[in-house]
Length: 456
Image: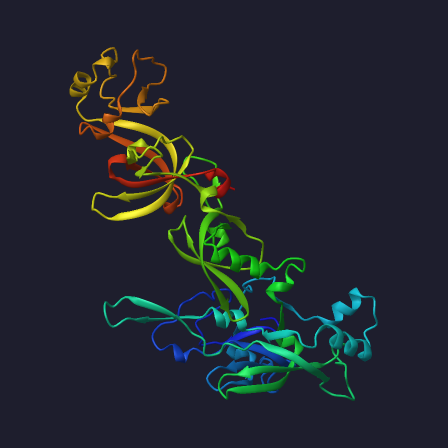
């Protein structure tokens, strides 16, 4: 194993997290799970004098004990720990503190005076947090509920470090300000935070290598009040065109090269999650509640920009429109409420692939719709495509065949001898092809420009 470095994240070997596997949910007695440690100081690797066996490095590590409200340091042998790798939640909010790189970018010498000026100018009063923050923030423990035995997830926040403010700094050794090994200054930042355990404020010097700088939401777009814009939109019950989360959950429509990468969200509330803001919304593609970090400009839409006619409903003349009054267009998107064979009612967004009629008794069908007498069925072909006339009636569409007087009245939608069916890509089922009987659709609402809203 390669040698450890300052600022790395490690866990005791009994911890369930291994390498990049940090999304494991912890069950049974979660208090046995040790904290994520941040390497603060390292002693050189040593070997046994008699056998020459590698006895590892001594690592001085730090973590935050939420229950006691204090940072704790422990020395631990490198043979007793595992490295873990965790991508921070959002690169726009957390980033490494690199004084040396910042001075080099400004073409300044790496002198102690320049380091001091840099910190005073750019870091005093800025927010920082221990590097273990995201992995501790996303720890989940699982327990069974007493009522029905189902699993209940809760956050495991026993070691979540606080957000702190830099109020000062010092060189660890005023005589020897630079490290003999790296040539870098050994700087500690004086950090202040509200201690929930003591109900007062605490201060502590922490090594800069163990910390992330935390950027404010309002600093992402200096010329725009991003948070206020989102809050205002939420108050107006606005809709947002958002990326599907997680980002790798985008999907391809079955039988098509079309990729669905965006969803429609109805804003519900603004949440503050430790160091960043989120918007809580209802996800129309997944048909469930979700949350997105407020870190970018979101496309805001009004209800009238998204939804068209609704069925059943009343038109301007007071006529009640039924579900079968909806003239479905191929490749159009619709929001439907559907009752399945087991009487379960669900809602979903679908994209129309095809429209067809299933004829149960062909002779009975021909006897009723006599204007189709010229149509001769090809064997047992009782599935036929249909489309709409301007007046809402339908006509049968047979490839390469023309049927005189090919018009069927709207009463066909209530004819028990036929089943009028939509062939669709169902977004709730990751774009898989699903058929829906119009007779079982309880509500339909047109979606305006669904391609622009959902497709990549």
